[in-house]
Amino acid sequence: MNFAVSSDEIAASGPDGQISRRQILRAGAWGLGGMAVLSLAGCYSVGLPNQPTLPGDDFDYELAYAALPDGDYTWPAINYKSVDRKYWRQVVDYKSGSRPGTVVVDPYNRFLYWILSNRKALRYGIGVGRAGFAWSGDAQIRVKRMHPIWRPPQEMIARKPSLGRYWEEGFPAGLKNPLGARAMDLWQGRTDTLYRIHGTPDPSSIGRNVSSGCIRMWHQDVIDLFERVPLRTNVVVLSKEGEA
Image (tube, rainbow, N blue to C red; front, side, top):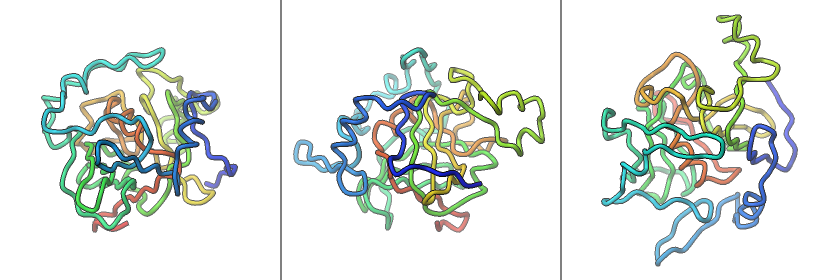
């Protein structure tokens, strides 16, 4: 399925697609390829300015995964201690040929990496739906949506006709929305891959293969990633063989 997109990619502040003043200011700070390189206390980081602090040895997971007020919604606290620690947000050793600032998705091991350097990455646990295994390759984040509206794909409507009522107006944003708190849409040139990185109302699905959706993240984690990556961020989705 092909969709036209203008030369000005969209950073939606809500379902209506309006762009906030804060996002415009951020856009002005982006460097080459939509990436700002920041020097903080003698260290170098990638991504948007004013992004969250990277998790370190003394990172407060209780606070990171606590209930999170977010506009009209408050995303519930995550019972993160019931999930294998490897799926918690953390900086890890990771060798990659991708440039710093790239997102690497490994659906088969259920990790998403945001590359910090040729040796380090910020890793998040993910849940992977059927659509998450249907595509691999290189793309870019061309649309970022806060509080997204969800429209079920036609294949899902064919399996469950009752979902057809959400095709025109969409499933409203909120705590029960299948895309959760944020969505980032991946495009190849002018073609929407229909591949999404998004939140989930089912926190127990992280670290698991699930029946539907693409790449799921805890609300708190997808918001954290959303606040780091600019539009035009390169994304590499690995195949089962570990290649794009």
